[in-house]
Length: 201
Ligand SMILES: *[C@@H]1O[C@H](CO)[C@@H](O)[C@H](O)[C@H]1NC(C)=O
Image 1 (tube, protein in one colour):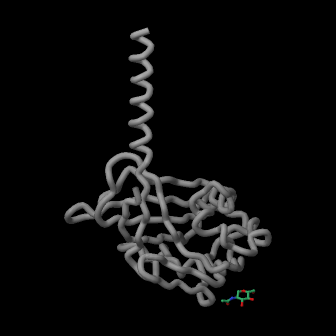
Image 2 (tube, helix red, strand yellow; image 1 turned 120 degrees about the vertical axis):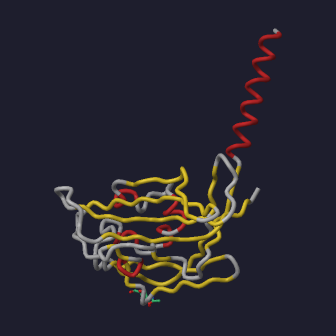
Image 3 (cartoon, helix red, strand yellow; image 1 turned 60 degrees about the vertical axis):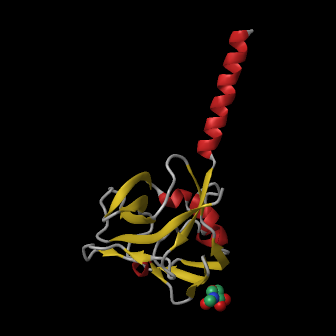
């Protein structure tokens, strides 16, 4: 009996710890009013947001800490329909004098397959608001595809485990395209979003 109750306490304690370490919720507050920044020190074949999207019918605005987006955007990145698009995200932290890579990162090998997948972060924050998704979901990010958005705000809430996230951070997103023979296209995309995390709980 003593053993059982000790065991029970141990389990309850573990659940408690796990709950604490899973409970850190943060909001990402972007630094730049335009949201999408350029990656520094890139060669000529690495393009920025304007290399992927024609944003002449798209607006980004900011009120306090919230970024609002609306309008349409047309893909203009010079790749071919059917290309595999690989996307990676990496979080960096500014540590005293330099940007240092953190442990948080992910690579999505075939973004086209999951761009409109409901459980994904990018669906929750972005592709959910594309009103013509039925027409464009098979056209991925191929040139000429026009995505129409209902107005939305970026409310970037993340759950993190581990050490508290304080100070300047940035997410670097790189997008690369590969043909059917798995040969990479000449140009790639790099977008940087700087900001900081505010703890919500
Ligand atoms: C977006 O595209 C739709 C359909 O092509 C059009 O009716 C609408 O006016 C466009 N919106 C903007 C902000 O250009």
